[in-house]
Length: 251
Image (cartoon, rainbow, N blue to C red; front, top):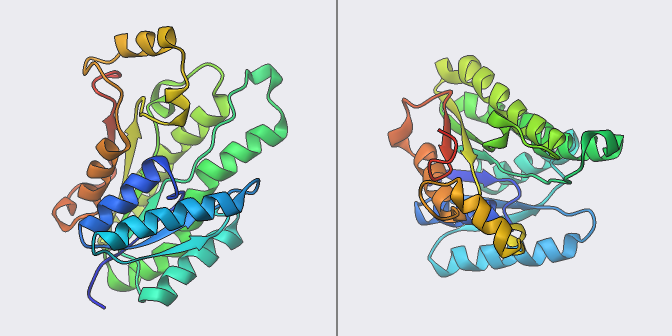
């Protein structure tokens, strides 16, 4: 019962997957959230693979299918984690989607899908988790933003707006709940290796690399190690910060 508990939204692949595995390595019990309205069974299989890797390393976890873009889904996710372990010590708001489109061609549905999944979900999950964190007067909320939330990007008005919104959410939660022992920080990844970046043509990849002083794309593990640090007891005095993980691309 004394083992800390972390909940990671959108944890079946990519950054969320790496975060869940790293937190388990660091001694957290991890609730692995997954959801895909177009192919939920596929995402469930991916989440099970994450759980298997955690358990193979001696860790503990559960998988929870829930649509965190809705208030009801977020509340269900938090309640299932609390039901399993009685506590939530760290919440990582990672769930996110993108549907690139020029503003003039963007539909209302595309706008709302991205905003609801990337930004509203973080609000819903944070609100539901805070009542448990406040009882213990400690907790960690970590929001996965993006460098495009700081600098913007053509064709990603909705995505950039959602990631910028996470920064405002981070700053406000840090001020509201810092006095109660709960820290809130944001991580802003740059170009990270993913299914999407692996499909880029060589000339596009080369152009991206020219912008990165580190000379390589980041990995999900680069992000996960920072998130695990922010979730740990040694990060207790770090609050309301945005930390970029982009190889020096945006300084």
